[in-house]
Image 1 (cartoon, rainbow, N blue to C red):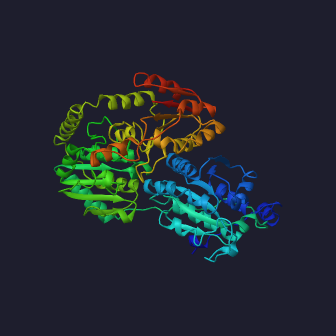
Image 2: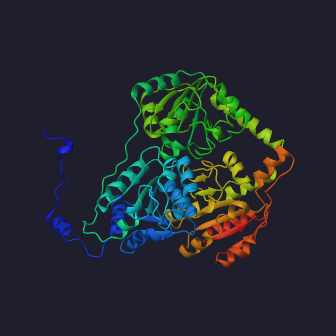
Image 3: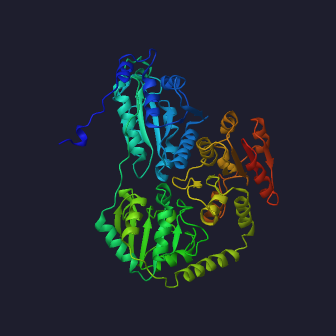
Length: 548
């Protein structure tokens, strides 16, 4: 009897000859880029540094495309967006110490948003590992400890022969649901030393499948099919699993209303009769979900922003499908199903009996009317008009990346993403500076398709250096900067809480003149001209800036 684990691929004579006589002049850095290429990578992001030069020198001997940003944190945001758009692990090459640590905020966002980023950082020479104080440049007592609380897994290399296996293990970890960032670190001398190891060829790093237990999906299917008032909350896990079609089929079979979280934008058609859209911060939506006798939560941990700031208190039975086992029942008791969203929804479709309609679409219309009436009473026509103009200017299949700014807070609830995986925000970790560098990563992922970035003037200042990146690579990103003279949302929070704001007012540059100094076309617009100016910018190849 032959078992799968007994099978060994036999090299051909040509392969054996090539392995015995590898090209001269290769180093440990070559093993890194060969491994990445063998795993299927085509593009890498990063920033060179002294200890990492072995990797960057090897890039010129490879077919990998390098996109270099000006700040490590921005390079991390670009890799995050590349991973979100493609579903592939995005390599991020970094140097030791300060260079590595500068990426932490971006990796936290990738972790919160389940974006697959494969960060490969250099280390001090191998003799300096282990916490001794040798005085190497960039030396930290335990560099990986700074990453361990953020990334999914940490992989430390000490010899060249460990490089392919460590990177392959990290790749598999990054792409096993839930996706996330991983950290690999390799000493400087290991990267620089010449190698006689054979050229790395294709590797198998197939991610593990997170399969639902059938007894749990059988119970869930029975509960949903027999519910009086079922409802579904669709989170970002539905988008990442490419499961929006499965979700639509299940919702229609059950006649179950669906609301998407802010991370799940586009997971369900906005104008569908069963769509509650994304009004999760509205009390009418919260009341509706609390009234459900069976609530299916797919790909969401029901965290702060998905639970109306933890005011949500479901009264019915909750079924939670989540690939991150740590999020199961972390906020509400539930029938917890640890599984990838696509696999679990497929299982429910195979077992759930159709549920007849019981006025479900009418109940959805009532809630949406209540939401619209409440907003109309607040005289927020300017905010609604700006979002409508952005939506009209942006092609349906063009991705958008939103920084933490007031217009983005509106977009979380009110913007129709129209397609899955086209609207992305920094609401996972909530740090500033995400929008523009992330949009650059998306443009690198799919050249020729326009990409929109939206920032406030405060968040924009985090990313000004990347105008040079946009120009250097000719990336098709239009950057909408909403200039309100400060940290606008914090100004509102502090004024509401304390009667006045402190530290929120900002001196800022002439953004149009600044962009043009980088060779990036820019225009100053107004609410009346926004739609026209944004449409023109998005339809013009290359980078551009629109300042509102």
